[in-house]
Length: 75
Image (cartoon, rainbow, N blue to C red; front, side, top):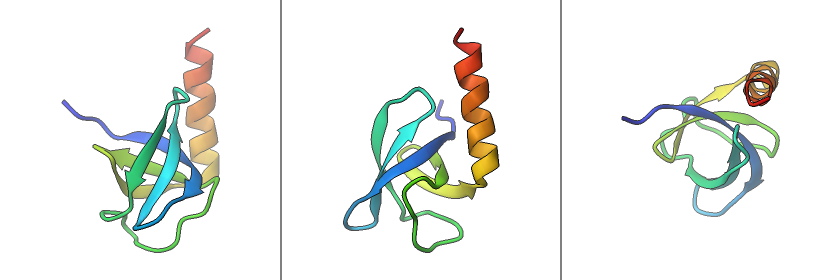
């Protein structure tokens, strides 16, 4: 079963991809092909990623809050 996860963009790649970090700290190359709404992506932006494809955007506060919850749960 696949689930969607939040990722923070680290850098913008070529051919419609970005390098992004998930909430566990692992980095992934993510395709922007399915991003809704489409448009430019900036480092630091939060994306909802499903099976290697960005499918949506998350507000900065939402991403930081989720990251803090995950980090707190690991203690």
